[in-house]
Each structure stands twice: as structure tokens, then as C-alpha cells.
Image (cartoon, rainbow, N blue to C red; front, side, top):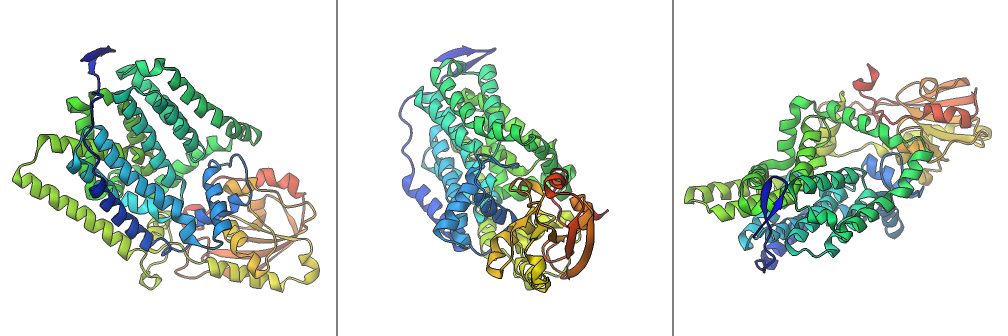
Amino acid sequence: MKVRSGTVDVPTASAGALPAFAWREVSIVATVAATLFLARIDRYRIGGDELYFLAAGRHPSVSYADQGPLVPLLAALSDYLAPGSTAVLRLPALLFTVLAVVLSAVMAREFGGGRLAQTVAALAYATTPMAVMQSAMLSTFALDITLTATLAWLLIRWVRTREDYLLVAAGFVAAVDFQVKWLIPIVWAVLALGVAVFGPREMLRRTAWWLGSGLLAGSAVPILWWQHSNGWPQLAMGAVVRDEQLATAGLTAVPWTMIQVTGAGGLLLLAGMWAGLRAERFRPYYFLIPMIALGLGAVVLAGLRPYFVAGAFPGLFAAGAVYLADRGLSRLGAIVSGGIGALATAICVALVLVLPLPESALRQPTDDYAQIHSRSLLFGLDGWDDLVTAVAETYDRVPPRQREALVIVTQNYWQAAALDDLGPAAGLPAVFSPNRGYGYFGTPPDTATTVLYVGVDDPGTVLGTRFDRTTLLTHIDETLGFPGVNRGVAVWLCDGPSRPWSVVWPDAMQLRFVDGTSRHER
């Protein structure tokens, strides 16, 4: 049967029985992936953003300048259950990655794929470098990818079953995702546009759709109020993220970046895109095309981060696997496909087992912002102990009478988060920073007449105020150190700010990340 939708006849998806779910095969793939990811879950030193999540969790709020409250809440929970454990901190990222692996198989089944297609889809996602990255550290994208894919699956399932609770569930998932990242309202709106253009338009006439939309809208109210009360910092974050991504890899490097993210499995993603446009069984799901196109356009044309489109990976892997299973493969095609799968698996296993590389393998200093990302992936972040030790030793040199009204102020939020998390054990006082979301955690008290300033640039320039006296006390400058952590960092003792901190702080706050490489010093 076909229903008229727009200018094309869209076949309705069959509501009949689906193929059996490949429990055994998918469970094996998911278990092996989870075991590999778990084996290295605490191999990387804690990251700067992870330290920031912990700090944000100690400053609970309905919103932050650069993200929703859910990831800081998870960080706070992990810190409560197992203080100092990076393994527990990263468990949500690992669990959401494994869920995406299973979801790829579930979507293949929803498209009518049998055991082979389901297993291939699960294996394809599990062996992408994106999955390796997603499971390695707690991040907003680790949750957002899987939640976006879950939203797509719920709508795909509704097309087949017309069970309206799925639309309400989709709105709930979107509402949860909005507490992680703030792209999901755009995704929701683009999905609605896709339904209006390609069908099934009946979806938009269902009360359940509007109930789901209401859940998403309702979840946004506290965040929007916070943003309004704090000058809408998120509106400026888009440009900051774009500048950082272009500094990491320019537009000309986007194809190579996408290859690095998808690995050999990228060929199956391309097959999924082709299938979505050409195969008859996928015509009821054309409403997903604008969402995928928007994500690709944001990455390729706007220079945004590759994971902005990764929420489409499970669905595309599923579509590609089902399409190839439908067509069948010649003997040569089967051999080639098996070789590609083996290559993808080998790359994934190698990444998990080899990374991070030992610090002794680091030979070249990190002099450019573009090297920050690659160094973080290859070696992880380091230098936190050097930073805390240097600041603690400097603090101990300050006369006791000056310490009574002393606070620490850092130039970037990584430094502040590290000193906030690791500093109390070293006897350090309260830490503040005007950088990124940290600037909204609190303002130094006006009674703080002495500041121990940690940064890569002059304190007067960064903080926008003069001091009666500034004294450079310490340089932290390891040749192979991490910029902004234990390379290119200075500690200054500043006495007598010319203006109260309550006046200085709003002007000093900035969203740009200051890392200390030549990008910021030119």
C-alpha cells in the first residue's frame, strides 16, 4: 500500500513481524567491545574537560555557559561514589558507546535486516575510531551521539508501528539530550521539516508528537532562563567552537578528519547514504535526510566538529548493512567486504591496545594549537602534577599575613579545574578563573587583596585591572610539557587590585580557550 505525501508516493512501512533479533551475535560484539574499552578506561590521565566537569559538578546549576547540567551531574555522582577514580568517571561514556553498538543492530532489524545485517551494523560501529574516542573519556558528545541515534530509532519505529508512545518517548529522549548539548532542538526541528516535506505527515498530526515537543520545550525553560540571566553566553560559543575546530584542522582537512573518525567502516556509511536515497525499503524514512544533510553540512561547510554528524552513524551503518545483505555479494565482494571488516577491527583493537603512547615516545614540543588535539589522542594530557606542585610551592613562599586575603586566579579553565580538584590536598586556597564556564562559578571576593595568578599572559592584561605590585615568582616550562599546563605557564603574586573584583570580573570573562601556543601569542 502507498500513501500520498507531498509530490511522491511513499510506501508505508510494513507493520508485520520483524526478523528475530540476533541476540547471540550482537551480544558477542557488544561484550568484546565493552571488554576492550573497559581494559583501557583509566589508561589516559584525566583530561582538562573532565576536570572541568568535576568542578562544574561542585557548582550545581540548571545550566552552564557551554553545556547542560547532565554531564557535570554524572561527574559529581562519580566523585561521590569513587573520589579520584577515572574509571568510574568514564563509565557513562563507555556504557553509551556500547548502547550505540547495540542500537546499530536494533536499527538494522527495524529496517528488516536479518542476523547478518544486524551483526555487521553492530560490528561496524564498534570498530570505528569514533567509538574508541567516544568510550575513552567522559564528554558531552559521548552521550549526545547515542541519544540522537535513539531519537532517530524511535521515529523510525513509529513509522512501522504507528504506536504513539514512541513519539512521547522521542520527546523525552530529546529533553534528556538537551541537558547534555543544545543542538537537539535544531535536530528536532529539522526532523519535523523532513516529515513535512517527505512524510509521513500523519506524524505531525498526532497528539503524541506535540506532547513530545512539549517535553523538549519544557526541559529548555530552566536553561533558557539561566542563559537569559547571564547574557546568553551559548550564542557566542558556536563561533568559539568553530574557531577551535578550524585551528585544529582547516576546511581542506575535513575529508581526512572524517576518514580518521570513521575508519574503514566509512565505506559502509557511504553505502548507507546511497541506500537511503536509492533503495525502495528506505523510502518511508526520507524524513531523516535533512538531519543527515544538516550534520554533514555543519562539518564540511561550517568547519564544526566531526561528531556533530555521528548521531547518524548507527542508522547509516544499519542501512548500509541491510542494503548490502539485500543485494547479496559475489564471492569477490564477500572477500573484499570481509577484508574491510577485518581491517576496521584490527585498527580498532590497535588503537585500544596501543594508545596512549608512553610519554617517553614524545620527541617534539607542542608549539601549535593544531598539535594539541593529536597530542591529546596519542599521549593524553599530562602535567597536572607539575602545575599543582609548582603553584603549591609558590603559595608556601607567600608570607602568612598575605595568605589571609589570597585567592588563586587562573587564565584558563583547565588550570582552574586542576587546581580546584587536586589543590586542596596540597593546601591551596579557593580557585577562580574568568575563562569559559568557570567564570560563572563565582567571583573572587572584594576582600581578596592578594592574588596568586596562574597563566600564560600578563595578569594585568588578562584581568583588566592594575595592581599596586606584581611579582613574577615561578615559571613552569617543561620543553616537552603540555602548553598551558606545565609549559609556558607563569605564577605571579599580585597585590592591591585597582578595582573591586565585582567590577573587574564581568569585563575579564571570556569564552575563548587560552592554551599558550603560538596561536594565541601572535
